Length: 436
Image (cartoon, rainbow, N blue to C red; front, side):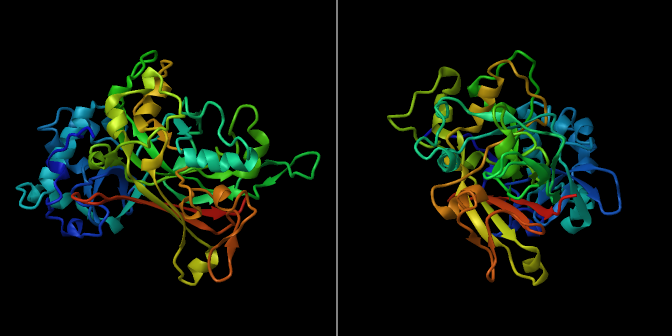
């Protein structure tokens, strides 16, 4: 397999003077250093930070110092959003990560300069890391496509174009948030035994377990990004919950695809794990079979065929309001790996830009629902319950076909590989509130 270039930031033996970053079960060791935006408790000012152990490093407070070695850092790190950082060349992203790693490394001479800007995680409120200008949601899991398709087209679950083209739709960017309360949407719903639709709260509210992929390095309209250069535009990755109202979606989606069944809310985790931190977890994509069609040249790259997939283990947990009141833990509904996706992040970038569509810093892709083949590896209730026909056990006699008011959905993700430090993504949380 082609070797992915690594550097000192990936050294598993590296330790930090921030002691909580050295815990073997921690999500944010020095090998991770994800970016986010935060407010200090009691303040409205948004600042860029980096997660390290159980603390947040106020990178904005160190902007002037970092600007001494990284051109422009004093400006783009002082912004209340990651967009100016994302607009920088990928070489700048790498250099900044390396510099921060050296400052946080055990024995670093920068400890005295950094400590005043190290804040306990409990003393900050995390905010949207960037406001995406656009959101495209892909359909990259062939297992999900097959599972969902089999509910509606049992003899031909995959559409004829699936293996030829990375399918996606343009979602609603304005309703993306970092979790919290999600209001059950209203919309048109048509029951199978009714002649006409009615309007009201969705009865089939669902989640979709996905990765979010943030882009950077602006391009011009009319300028496609070759697949070999796609990773230069992938800033980092987060968790993404593509909330879905299945009954609204089912009635409205023909012929133009999802609209109100999706646009009411999308939740992401607040920390963005950088593409550089994910380098040790790049793997060979899912193998194509002899019966699969060949890739068109613009989607075909030797390096992508060797190490274009990301091996991220994602999980979804659900807890009812009554469970939370009794102090009961959430129940895991599904766990799967993004290594099994049919399409790679680079193929997504190459495809969307192939017609000249430009990239703007902060643009967001969804991977599409990440699912496996077994019931415990499915990334949506639509699949788990076979369209609501097979309830799943929750706790103490409770079951679910779709989400009920008061339910909390929690998504987590980790990257693990022998010989490297494990890294985490934090949490993507959302609680369902009753419709208005």
